[in-house]
Image 1: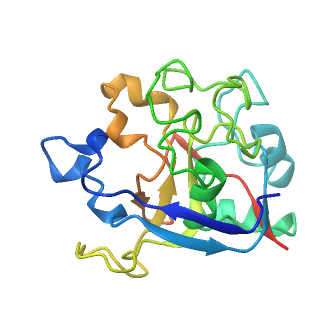
Image 2 (image 1 turned 30 degrees about the horizontal axis):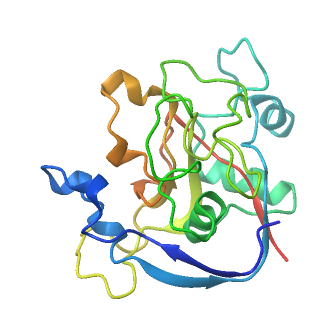
Length: 217
């Protein structure tokens, strides 16, 4: 259970870790940082596995040698349907960020200093919970690496944000968290800090994106 209370959502523009050369790495859509109050909620400790999803949808298949790997390559609609079948739901992006960051504004689940060894950013997906260092203060695993995760949230502007994006509205869903194949493209910590917001059309399928479920109390 994630306890009720305030936490810091987003990131301020003067943060050293996002001082890079392009708007894409400046997390403009995650500014300004702001205090947000959330009620208590439940979130799954681990990402949904291939084995669990296969029980829900037996016809869904992809090559894997390990059924404890997180499911990936499923659309937002499939992820949403799975959570509803478990009498749960996808987490909001705000819930996801609190579960990952806690209340002390950390940029990675382990703190503010980046370490590529603390989460799975390599070339192969791993079983859920393989790296204990990628576990938040609330005991939620694989939030910084392994697979990125669908949230229930449409991509919209933060309160008091001056950043404009033509995709705002009910166009694309927010995806959170880093993923295992980031090393393939050259690992950039700006893209895997916990406040970073990615997004995609809900019908899309991505081989680095899975999900976990949440539940209101």
